[in-house]
Image 1: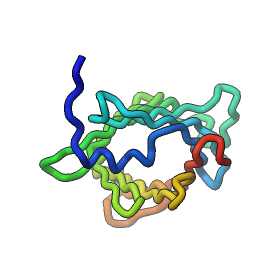
Image 2 (image 1 turned 90 degrees about the vertical axis):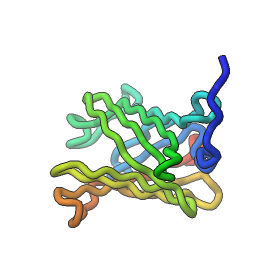
Image 3 (image 1 turned 180 degrees about the vertical axis):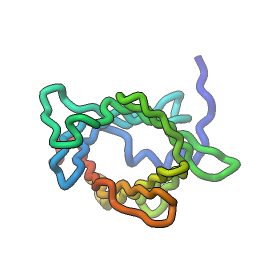
Image 4 (image 1 turned 120 degrees about the vertical axis):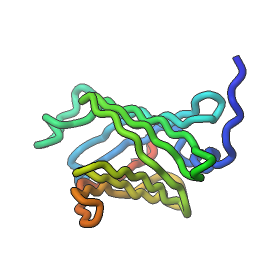
Length: 156
């Protein structure tokens, strides 16, 4: 079967491809194995994340952890931004918008009563990404939800 021709903007995301260990909440949560892989000849980037069943999660994470998660990233050439589809083990499904500039991934959504955004910057050597998720009830006053650190598998 033939694949669609990927939009050239998708190639910016090559830096994500591979396996990563995700750490969150000041490294109290993790490692969460995260894999980024191309689908349909590079038309989409898929991210899958899950914890090892033997991993003990702290506090709120133990009862409200989203794992497993899947994210599909594509490019909207009319809006000139990425579209991110997200689903998780809690039955949550969301649509985000995204951008990638100067090694910084931004992902955001606006929803009544619950706005979210992620900002994560990849290190120059491509072995780590540091960032944080933020949330807002009104889209104006933001608070940190939790920090995230991605470490290339085998580099921690």
